[in-house]
Amino acid sequence: MPDPDTPESTARVLLTRGVVHPWHHDIYGHMNVRHYAPFFDDASFHLYAALGLSLDGMLHDHGVHMVSARAETNFIQELKAGDCFAIDGAVLRLGNRSATFQLRMIHSDTGALHATYDLTDVIFDPKTRKSAPMPEAMRTALAAHLVTE
Image 1 (cartoon, one colour):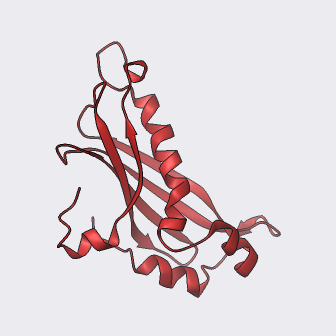
Image 2 (image 1 turned 120 degrees about the horizontal axis):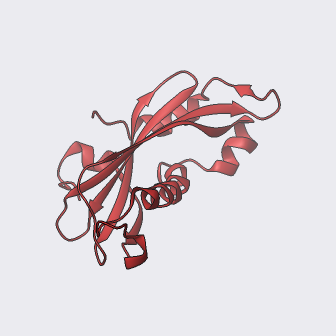
């Protein structure tokens, strides 16, 4: 996990923890790429609450919610059965109608970075079925968790 004394560590929030099981293995003896997606996807559902925003509140207060427009996984170092990891997240970019987040999968014992997941979400108006401007309250909450790559 990041050094607790750095400014970036206060911007990043813990989203979830997991463990690699033997059934996550591929023929090469490490976690197959297909299993990273559900771990990161589950973590992304915790993202907004961890950043101080309620998914229900966005819809109720602002009439919008978020939809994922792009996701990119970068595989850095293999994980094997028995490895425990944590996934944290932060904001990489704030746009007028979107935000890009970075989630990191970090080994719980060694602190090694195993994968990153860059997720771009678009503010979406379900009535018009189109993107919408980011409400200022959302921008303020997300800005507190902005980091540089």
